[in-house]
Length: 128
Image 1 (tube, rainbow, N blue to C red):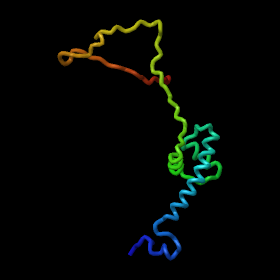
Image 2 (cartoon, rainbow, N blue to C red):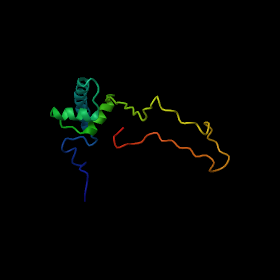
Image 3 (cartoon, one colour):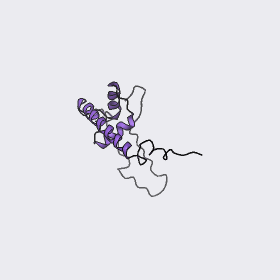
């Protein structure tokens, strides 16, 4: 017969509802939130979860990244997200423009009368 041990909890002085555990967790999270805020402030508010986790571990804190995610969300902190803009085409100003053979009219009366395509980004061996 297996049981979850809830019958032993009152004898051991523990709360079977887990309210004591919840209070301990909230207190530990509040202490961790203060350390996270300090690390975030030291990084000029740029560090997100991975770097914050690394900084706290480097300082000797045993902490899981999922806990950092939860605490940072609860205190409304987030790292900076860089918006990388990819420039896909560098036009040659001296090149002649391709003629618009369909006159920007893409409607057709019957199948197989117009074929159009668009190539927006090609990867090359040299890179971008």
